[in-house]
Each structure stands twice: as C-alpha cells, then as structure tokens.
Image (cartoon, rainbow, N blue to C red; front, top):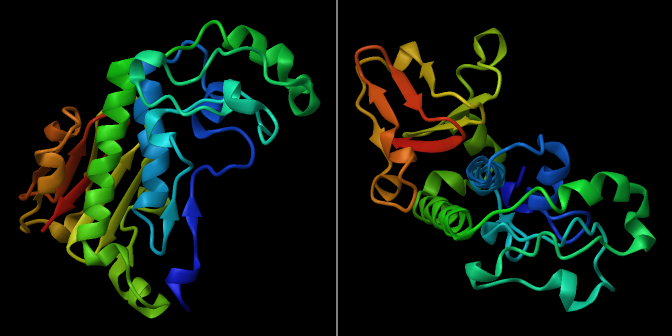
Length: 236
C-alpha cells in the first residue's frame, strides 16, 4: 500500500559486495569493462525501482572486500573504501579471513589473481550510476506515493511470451526504461507506442557513459534499441 516502506537494494553490508558476488558468479574471463557495466545494471534495478533505494558505500566505485562475506571484524585491510581509483578497488588484497570464508577458498584463490579493474572502469561505473541517481531524483514517476499509483503508471509491455531473455522493458508514465543485460545490442518493439516521440533521457544523453548515448528510438515502429550491458531511460 505504501511504496515508501519498500527498500530496494542490490547489495548491503551483509555477504559479499556486489563486485565480489559477481566475481564468484561470472566467468573468470569476463572483461573488466563488462564487469563494470554489469555492476551498473545490477544497481539500476534498485535505483530505478519504486520506494527508497540504497547501495552499499563504495559500490559505485566497484568496491571489493577481496571476497570477504562477513567483514565486521576484518579491519581496514579488507574494509577500506579506495576513493582514489589508482589504488584499485580492494580486490586481490589476499584470501579473506578463514572464519566465514574458508569453504570458498578453493574458488577464491584463483579468482583473486585473475580479475582486475582500473580507473576507466571504476570512474565509468561511478559516472553512469550518478546519472541514474539524477534521473531518479528528478523524475517524479520513480517515487509514487501509493500502490494504486504504481499499478496505474507501471507496466512491462514485453513480458511473458514477448520477453527477450536478459532484457527488461519497463514503461512508467512518460518514461520507458530498457535494461539490457545481454552481450548484444537489443531492439525492443512496443507496437502501441508507434508514432509517439521518445528520446534518450537528457541526463544520459549528456552524461558520463558514452555507450548509452548510442541508444535510439524509431517512432515508426515503436522500437527502442539499446547497446549491450546497458540500461537506458527514454522520455516522451
């Protein structure tokens, strides 16, 4: 009944940071650029939801605790937020303490020497996330007051049999949000919007992510095209 009572998040202080959770789940060969873009996509699912959204401190900087899942007593060596991207993101600081992590050491050990990100990925992810925060805080549609308002404004027009695996297309009032988690550019056609005029949200069009700027909308067919590993917000 009250969206403001529902807290959305992709990671919090419990368990691994988002970067570390993805390190365990993604193929070790995943590029640094893709890891950063996937991190932003995951954060976007909370940032562009109804109700308040949080992110763990440093998640936009790809913060890692070197795969430590319970770092309350691990000290600054594992818990530090590295504000200067030249210092890295904390990944590879060593095997996390045995108490809560020993069972994952066989998986953690090889990962800690294979995965890395640098300033382009850290700064790029932070800039893209700040753009999403600006959209969220300037578009009233992301902070509706009641469940009835949400149900009236929100729809997923390509869900069910029309859904593209790995893509979520969300219509929210005058906005259309496409989250493309796939490794390819995707086209999402909403036939009922054919003839309408949409454009990439001006915050993203002038923002810090050069990739999203190639997202486009074809009015004649109602087709939204979004690059790989990208969340794009379109405004009517």
